[in-house]
Image 1 (cartoon, rainbow, N blue to C red):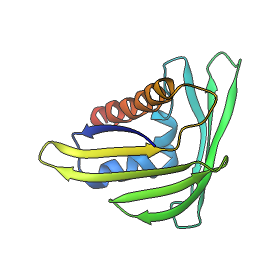
Image 2: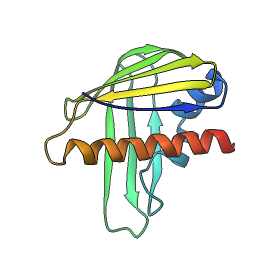
Image 3: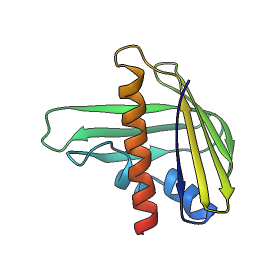
Length: 134
């Protein structure tokens, strides 16, 4: 698995809500400023499904990021399986410096692990910036 992490200066409840509520997901879930997430839905329950559309702002490309939750522990952890069968584990841990978000995921085979790590880290950095600014 590939792991990315960040520490967010906010309460656990705020971090959880901004991570899971569609109205927030659309504000941070993209890797670069020339992309955006115009649509998100999220049923944060075991067996619940999620889907978000990530798209280039110029309209040249888009894809759906979707899957199903296999474990939900509010304010602690999420596990899910993406539509392509890869597994993802996310933990939310309170530390003296804020909430540490650790995200581990099965790599795909089209892009290098370094590129995948960079992309997922960029999205996590967007999340941190969004939470801390709002």
